Length: 77
Image (cartoon, rainbow, N blue to C red; front, side):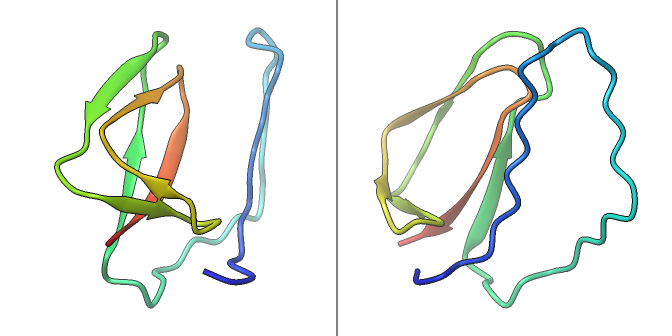
């Protein structure tokens, strides 16, 4: 994908409180996209059953390791 919009959020302090206001989420015109997320405090491995591409156009396949509270949007190939 070229010039795909993104909104990365990174928090390096795990003990700091964070507030985000005025965020609007809407559906994208991309029916083949999937969101994978880890809502736990430890790393989680997700076995991908098919090939994907990340929003930068890089191929993603096989097991995907998500760090605590990490998420990723992938496009089915």
